[in-house]
Length: 158
Length: 446
Image (cartoon, rainbow over all chains, first blue to last red; front, side, top):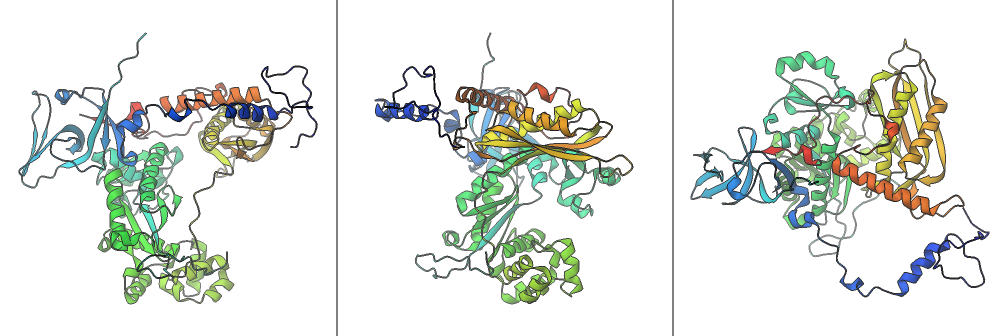
């Protein structure tokens, strides 16, 4: 739609609106003029502007391979991983000795520390009340992913 | 586009011929919906299972175990209940939130292999790989890397088919999927000419991309029963019998690339949202609720792609399959004075349309809406009826609604017109949790 006739204003809607010489401003020009105004005075801080902190950037390195789980139970309490915590799991990483991993044992997910040393493979809890799971001679351990972070939110107050 | 245009582009660089033939890879997730469910429920591995369509109607995905029992795609669940009891087949309602998220992951992994790609469907993508395959040593090695990485990163099994045309890459994918000898990756031109001919002679022509059941029958009448028969048929004859589309298919089977990658899906020109009702609906109030809900969903998509709608189409229909019931169906487009992406305005328009087309004394089976005349928000020319203040306020409100629904789950905040009981809502009795998109539905780990 074309606007050919200027719209008359009885009252300016922008108190700071710059005047267009010899003309009543068109409605759609307000935006443009305003824009030009601010462009004339670049903020001295503009060069230093950063995006702020993003927890996703901090926690997630391979987005396509990253999943989250909710922790049940206290088997990893010694590693400061508690009931209700959300753990960040990266499937793109090859599990190494001493990594905390999510593994599949008896068709259930379990979070434990991977012990893999001199041919010995174990999933070790970090709580003296639990026993490690030992994988002997050819018993296959299925690691689902490597835990790369933990997120905890305290209950809302008020 | 004319036929047989050589897709191969001159690729400068050492060791590569100037007329390098194109190489298309089709990457396809095996039993996609079933595989998505299995990633998050280890106990489902090797269990016969199906995923059902909207409304828990028909099997839209089957595990290999179920395929082996002879259950066909689209079999209604009620028809296989006996079989299910006998073999312990589990049925899941479709969880499109989960499948969509997993699909995005696969696509983003594939983009790292080749930026030249076409996302063909939720579980299939075409890649052009002739320029990058040498980085992996060979096409087969690249295919195995793709397969391995998707499996490791997402847990999903895929097959890769490669050939000099899209149609051949589809065929290669089919071969890789059906024959363990390929180990999930088939490069058709890594086979000798004779071998290729043998494989083609063993596959029914109906498996060829674009050959539907009707064409299949007519081909059979001409003695064309296998892929090889079609490959060896004269393209000119095929053209006179079936038209240019089939001629192109025929040329593609001969290795002459006629179909290019479609570029990244352009923003949708229209957005549709409709469902069949779980139970027949007769009163206008319930129709109003459902229509408002569809608009709400569609409007969210509209804003996500940064568009505005110029009109809203609304339709209702009775159940065509119940011939003894009175039948009625009608649709109506309601144009908006000013294009908008405001849920409230779009709902208003849809409900106005609904009021016009609604007739009482019918049992409605389905309703839906379509947002049409879409345009880019922001590039539109101002009109006399624009109210910039109001528009800005509406934009902020809609952004807040979308953000809340993203964080707290769909329909946390919704228009009151959508109602709160939703008796008509889709049946999805056995939907798995949204493992990857909702905080309160994450899988648990002990």
